[in-house]
Length: 572
Image (cartoon, rainbow, N blue to C red; front, side):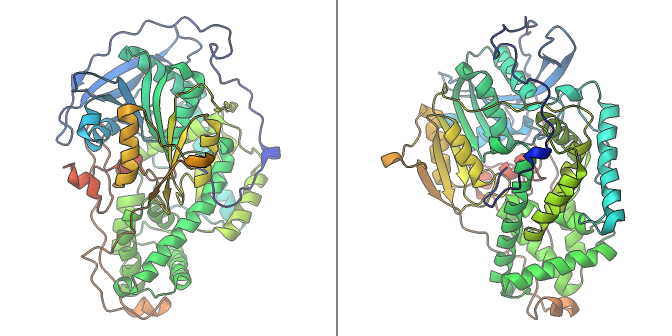
C-alpha cells in the first residue's frame, strides 16, 4: 500500500524498533536446532467448486528462536499436481495481513491454464492467528458493530470517544492474547512458510502473493533467497512505507479512486439520475453521508458504515453498479433499503472479519514502529483529510490501536535482494490499496525482476481476474520461468491495457426521480442492491464481485472469485 500522491512522513515521531527481526541463521550465528516435522497427513476436504481439495495441519514453533517450545498449528489446503512431472509446490497467499488463504488453492488451480496448474501442488494456508490455524485471534468481538461514532471527529468529545475505542481494542488484545502477540508478525509468518516447505519435502518453493502477500513473499525471499524457485507478486506493498506511511498514502489513493466512481456514476446519469457533473455527484454522496449521521439507514448504516460499504469500490470496479444503485435509491427515492443491503454485502463485519482485523492489527502494530503521540496522528489525519476526505479518518481509526499497542515494535527487514531468480512483479497504475509506487519500489529492490504494468487499471489483484494479457505473462512465467524484458533499459518490462469499466447492471433500469432528487440532480435513478453471498467450507471465502467473467467461464461457484478471496477491508 503506497501512494500516487505525496506521503506525510512522521519519521521523527516514530518509536524506534527494539527487536531484531532476522532469524539467527540470517545473522550468521547458526540456526536453532529445529523440531522434527512429521509428514503432512492430507485428507479429502473437497467442496462442489473444488472437489479435489485436500486439507492438512502443521505444527510450528510459536517462537522460532525457541523451536523446542510451545507449538501452534497452521491450517493448509492443497490441489495436487496431475502432470507426470511436477514443478513442486506453489504457495499462494491472498494478503491481509489477516486474510484466510485456504480458499486460494482451489481458486488458483482452477484459474490457471489446466496444463500449467497440472504441474504444481497448489498450496493454500491460513497464516498464524488466522481462520482455522490455532490459536485464532479475536481480540474484541463486535468491535465494528453498528452504528459506530462518526469517523470524522466532531469536536474534542467525539475524538476522545474514538481514541478510547482504539485504546479498548489494544487493551483487549493485550489481555486476551498476551502469550502470542509478540509472535504475530511478518517475519514469523515467513519462517512458518519455510517449515511448510520442509514439510512438503521441497528444496525450493514457488510463490504467488497478492497485496500484503507481496510483502510476505519479499520478506521470505530476503530470509531464504536460495529457497525461492519462482515468485510472482501482484499488487505490491511499498516496503519503504511499512506501515504508517503506507496507510497515509492509501488515503490519497482511495480518495482518487472514489472520485473515479463518482465520475462513472455521472457518466451513467441516464441510469442513476444523479447528474452529469462528477463534482456534483460527489457532493451528493457527502450530503448522503451527513444525513446518515442523524438517521442511519436501516438503523445500521451511519457515516462510518457508509465508508465501509463504498471502500470496496476502491478495490474492484465490479462493485460499482451495486453501489451506484444503492446511492441512487437513497438520494432519488428516499429508499435506504438498498444501501443497507449493500452494507450487509460489502461492509458488515462478522466473526471472520473480527479475526482478520485482530491479526491485521497484531501484524502491523508489531512489524514496525508507529507514532505513540496521538498529536502526530491528529495533525497528519487532518492534513490528509483536507485533500482526501473519503476515508482518511476511517482509516486512521482502523489503525489507531497501533498507537497504544501493548507489544514493542520490531524493525522491518530490508527486503532488497540480488540473490533471486527473476521475480515477476505485476501492478496496476491506479490501484488504490497498493498504489503504483509500491510496484516500482520493489522492482528496483529486487535485482533482475520484471515489472508488468496494467496501464489505467484501478483494481487490486490484477491476475486471474479476467485480463488475458496479464494472465498470459503469469502463466508463461509459471510454466517456463521466463519473464518479459524491456528493450533499451526501460523500467517497465511489459504493459497490458486495463479492462473496460463496468456497465450498469441490467436490472438497474431508469426510475422516475423522487423527492430527494433535487439534492443532486433532477434526472432518473435506479434499482436495488444484489443479495449477499454465502461462503464455502474449507476456507473458500465468498466473493461478491459483479460480472466476473473469468470465474463464470471456469465454472466456479457463483461468487467464488479472486476479489472475494482477496477480501476488501483496508488490507494492503
